[in-house]
Amino acid sequence: MSVSPAVAVEDLVVRLKEFLEANLDRAREIQIDNVAPITAGNARQAWEFDVRWLDGGTRRKVSCVMLRKAAAGQLETDLLPEFRVVRALWGSGVPVARALWIDAEGRWLERPSFIMEKVAGVTDFLALLKPEMAASSRAIARQLAAIAATLHAVDWKKLGVDFLPATTPQTAAAQQISYWESLFLKHRMEPHPVMVAAFIWLKKRQPIAHTIGIVHGDFRLGNFLYEGDRINAMLDWEMVHLGDPVEDIAWAYRSLWGPQAFFSLDEFVERSTELSGIPGDPEALLFYRLLSEVKHSIISLTGARSFMDGRTRNLFLADRASTITTYLKQFLDLLPK
Amino acid sequence: MTKPSIGDLLSAVAAGLRESVLPEIPAGPTRRQIQVAISIIRRASLVWDKVGPYLYADNKDIEETLRRISPLLDRAESNESTADLKPLCQKLRATLDQSDEPGVEYPSPATLGARNVELQGSLAELQEALHAESCKPPEGSQRPPSAERVEILAMLRALFERMLERELEVTTPSAARK
Image (cartoon, rainbow over all chains, first blue to last red; front, side, top):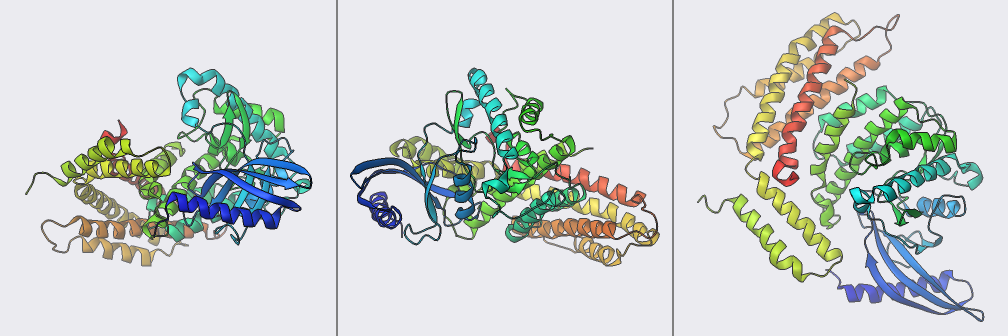
């Protein structure tokens, strides 16, 4: 049975109040206002709201965004690692929203959810691809390269994110292949011989990483909040892992959303390498560009399967399998002759 | 009955939803869901009559390619000392023999689809078997892949290019790309 938006908001307010009463020390008179759903990715449902409370004698207010794990979707990752990485990166030089509270099991908020401080800006990447935006977009892409450099060079052991699955320069590529292949085998609805060929090619040409760093996993235009020509916060950390930093650069430059029209891949690699000291090995870059096409195909396949199995009624996922052809075509186009 | 065709019907439903329903729905998640539904109906209106011919052409192309690959596979099996491709050769022949069985004159898209899945399965198995064989530790020094394997892989790659080109016409029809 569907729930009307008004009932959903009322229910959420009650749940949020109970959750914050349990998690905000010494807080009294907790008040929640301006609750509204906002657009987010297909893996998370997002809500914004304001929280006011009395802390001793001081009145406090924070504007928040809450991400709730979708019932089923195109990515089925846990929220806790994402929350812990974002929290650890606060103050590291990588722009992120301040991670505030998490209900990892969905005990209070019905489903696993976490709450961050709201950050100003928009995510609209189509606006950045308009020719008249070229100057701002170029500045943003340059900043994105600098953010990549900061993220990839950060001392992740010191940052305390070693709860992420361990990897080595020798195994980073194999772990990604194995992760995505297991999802492929689990969710495919037909044999997909081209995808089988793609995995065989990838297995034969695994690069050795120059270094292991934090890989955002969905590092691209559209996954950050910006104002004018300034990036305020990187979003959508649900695929974060330890791995080869080249992976993020390859993903950022997929033809579907890459900034190549105003900031070339070579410029991005040069800028990022200059700031991080991590070289953008061309063979590794090609490998991860190819893996990116496979990865997006499998994300689409997972979403389509969730819809066809009736685990979600999100229509965005219904026809996602039809996008795979384009991604696999791109794979073959990128493949050396 | 030929009019309205399923395509005409779906196209008109998509137009009706876009022109008279969508404007009544305020911005937000519900409106976005309706927009997605309209695009899906529109795609269905463009490809509903192309699926049968697509599957027919795809099956024919895969079968013909596998028929050309079959003798190469037999040669690889007898020439390569490490190869154990006999079960694969037999299975491939059995799959191809099925296409010679007398069938109905006009197979339905569902029948063509079932055959397509079977042929896709053969292509996947063929590659997995060749890959597993190439991963076996060589006896003595490392040898380059045999001429048969090189030829099979080139034929598969060319087939995959054609398959994806064909598939694009139903997953992303040119009218929807405009």
